[in-house]
Length: 132
Image (tube, rainbow, N blue to C red):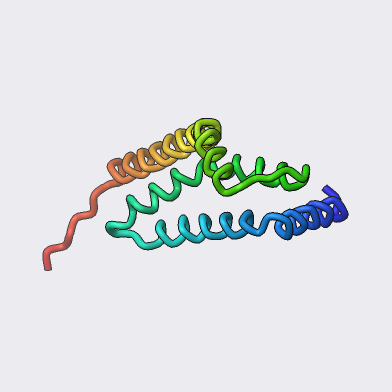
């Protein structure tokens, strides 16, 4: 990707924000809510999980929102909420497909590493303490 293409994409985004001010506001508010709720810990873990799950479909709705703005079509906050609900399943499945296989590989590699450590520790000769 060339620098000119990146600049053009940024210009399109900024123009979309100028025509639909709620788009960046909602995006930033959701990002802050996810970050803060996940960082609180304790009893707020469930709140963080709920916010994270609620935002899964928003990434698809955000794309639809940008497309509507670029085409000069109206797209309200209600449209964004409705699109988020409709997109939830697609983005959830995509997340599972992207995250589960590498997680299984990582867990297998971690288990193999720890099994090697345990095996090496159990085969090492025991040192006797000197009784002084």
